[in-house]
Image (spheres, one colour):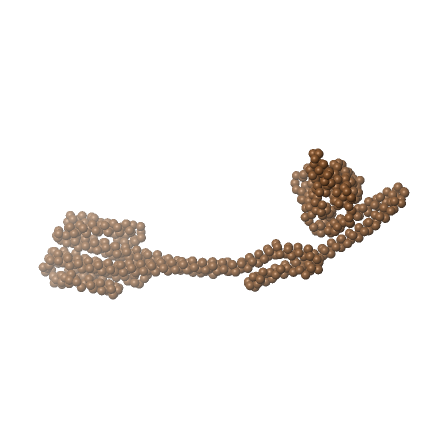
Length: 635
């Protein structure tokens, strides 16, 4: 599911990323355009002050010393604006402006020569004209980075208006010198005509690029009294084109031309913010688009994640429920059903069915529903197999019990017959053979009794009246094993056992002794010890045979404790299950250990095995146990 959703999501994110990159580029261009527009406006402020210094210098060079105070103020403003602009372009952000500002490096030298009156008027005026021209050309080179038509036209209109203002400023400076001198010198009238033509051409270009509001602002700037006076002065200048005297007040011309120049600068201050506002609009639009694409990418990721979660939950929730059902079946329902079947009668066991599955699983996807049905079929099959196994086990147990009862009946008849023959026989050899036959019959009876014990049947009552000495119980057990001559009761402290437990305890000891004889070499004896341990009486059957590993001892002790079923065990371990069943009935604790030192590893065998039997005080004669505890004799 994650892979299925990841492929289209990745494609959408790639497309969104491309859009984000494109919008980021537009946003960066819009921001850069706004910065360039603002820088261009600030450069125009420097151009305006340079134009003023240009005009004042022109008047000073032709002998009008009254311009010195105003020229000094203008120079200070120029220096302040120039220093600020140099600081802003010193990191290579606007190389054209940086180069143009660098052309003003000789400004201080030119000013000194102007003040010392050691510079030719034409040279000083040309320096200012060239510097202003380079600043205006830099504005064209540092145009807006974003190709928007309105922004481009606005910057071009601003450039045209700057050219017109520069032409008017040059005309103001030129004619200021002419009017101070009172006539045109050689070559001055063509310069006057060229600057006026350049002004008119720049204004015509501005009219084509400007908006109606911007054209109206220009018309307003040329509709005032100062503009009419400038036009009147220009008409007088045309009349003196032949070099005749010009009776004109230079101060009035300077004031009128300066007023019109300031009016053009005011129009520039309106056109410039318009371009800046457009750049801000473009930057805002690019920012919105960038944010929109980023939000779209985040939305795609959120929707994809939500769909993945919903899809995963639509799958995992039924699977979780199905897992819960399977765990309930494996851990509770099936074992409980099997237990019920095993405890029921065979006829009832065949009719038992497993519980119905949770109906909530029926409303899920078809695959989950089919899986739930398959799980229920598995449960039903397991229950059916358990029922069959229960019936087979019950039938097998009943068959074994029936066979055990038959063997018991035959063995009892055989023992009675042998007993009758022994009472009549006088030949010692024949009598010895009858004794051996009696011993074999006794072993056969023990085997039949073991079979009945394993099938859960009660043994025929063989209850001693009163009590029996523990030594007699051990001898009775030894009489029921095949190689009884190899068993030795080494030591046993006196103890009396209730008659109700004598037969089963004897049977238990016989099985343990039989196992010890089987595990011991033919030349080795099996030793039996008995002692008191507090209120309990302990017996030990010790052999020194091949021994057992730690793992084998652990499994043997589980069988002796009655924690395994004899139907799943190998035949050679049936004696352990018989001992475990009897021990559970009597409350006796049975445990096997290594006879000598324990092996160094779990896979090593010890030198023989010792079986320890702990008889509880309830199987012993109470008076004897109390006397034993009172005597304080150590075990």
